[in-house]
Amino acid sequence: MAGEGWRRAVRWIRLPRHRWTKALLAAAVVVLLVSAGATAYVAQVASRFNANVHRSDALARGMADETPSASPSSSVPKLSKDTNILIMGLDSRLDENGQPLPQDIQDALHAGDDSAGFYNANVLMLVHVPADGSRSTAISIPRDDYVKTAGFSGAGFKTKIKEAYSYGFAIEEAARQEQGKPYDYQAARDAGRAAQIATVSKFLGGVRIDHFVEVTMVAFYQVALAIQPITVCVNHATQDTFSGADFKAGVQQINAQQAMAFVRQRRDTSDPTYDFNDLDRTRRQQAFIVSVLHQLKQAGTLTNLPRMESVLDAVSKNMAVDRDLDLLMLAQQASSLTGGNVSFTTLPIVRFGTAPDGASVNVVDVEQVQGIVRDLLAPQPQRTTTPSPTAASTSPGSEASSGQAQPGATDPVAGTTGGETGSGGGDAPSSAGAGESASASSAPSPSTYTDWQGALQGGSVPCVK
Image (tube, rainbow, N blue to C red; front, side):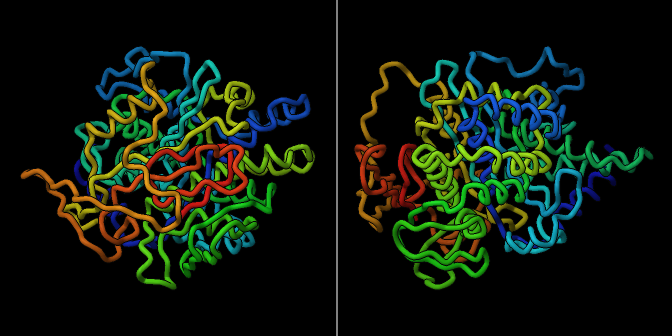
């Protein structure tokens, strides 16, 4: 691309914009299909869903080698029969065709109109489904991790990992304009998807991504409408005027609109001493999915399949998947999820920091991250289930802290100590692990997690920050 077009793309990306955040529990859509995949009726619904959902060729491009001669034969190799699915939830108030959401949906989301938001992947979750039906693993990637991009022509550059999508989108648009080509919205979206897929794969250590599911806000909201009321649990009463969150302490039932606030909250506006940040919000996302799985199993919510049919039809219009993803086949392979046989882990950060351009970012240790991912995706046979020595007490509010790692001499990112940041503000995260019940799947009370660290296990309604 010519230099001027590139500069226009970057200027467009960096224009000040509303910085609210939300979590589109995209995995919930897949979970619903998984949970219902055993009946012939749902096979018919899933078949229509497969036909209606937007299909994209971005995966092959995102997995291809970054050299000019790249081809499918030079893609990241598939080393096992296990399946890796990248879930992407977009920072956009538009549907998959670039049209504004209906006003009633905008009102329910408490998120502003289509002038707010952007094409950032604010939710990034890699779901690893073993071919043998054993425990699945979901890995949440904090959206503000400061990483090197991939998937563009030429050398990559460092930015927040969520922005790879928006850079790919903008660069494609600028290139088409400079070349005199007609505007092509879907081509720009595919370029964004490919850049996001390539960047995530590279950051995680060359992990093969077999499929992707991209969801807008409205898809999550429609799923929440279908299964409300939803049982959740929080350790402390908390309020947030930005997301609309207003929750009491303990177990409670919430509706679809409250569910949006539950997974979007990243601060507490009622208590300035309550340190609630973006990583805690990621834990909320995980807890919500686990609560939904548990609820579906206990209550048989999806036995009312006609009710689900219209919802799935609507969701399919707000989703994009790769060309080869068969949702019914995926449901059959991932059936273990319905029994809570899944764990959720958030990749660690070193500290909150500031990029050279002033953006608030998460400083990460790439080697540490890639080592953790290797262990999660291919655990060694001798590995035991002994709890981590950093596990915290299961009583709400118990916390521990340790010294934070220091940047290297050439680290361009300066540390921060408090105040609002793009990751939710506050000091760098504590090193306390997550406490959990020894018998989470059968205990009468929720398992309690005091922070975002450690693995959150399926099988019950978890109580989180």
